[in-house]
Length: 132
Image 1 (cartoon, rainbow, N blue to C red):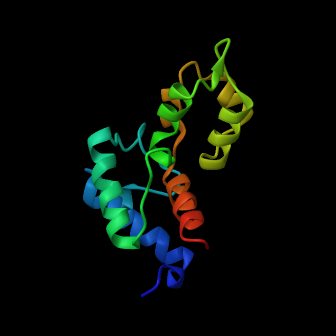
Image 2: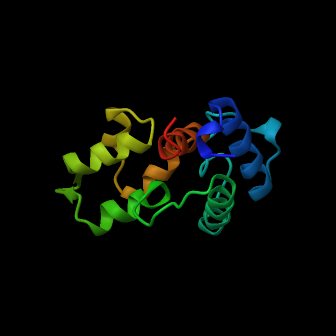
């Protein structure tokens, strides 16, 4: 089955299944708006397992500078100036996470970005990666 044959609804179901297997939550305890790190308490070790499962399920590769690693990329690439995100950092964040300008302005560390990542953000990222 090619990756393009996945419907968006099927993608959502598969992601929820994968997250349920990798976390202590059941599918009915999650919604697409659930915050991955803040509400579901996903930790870095679990992101590795989730990444592995996603890569196996969809036949894709998630690179080091993608989705899970946005905060590291921003921190390591000097995308912070005078305590604020650069335009490139804001663009990167908004390309991957549904977040408002007001929320971005309140963030004092790139690693606080994780508090805003929802399951839907992961689904959207995968949909782009799978070229829906």
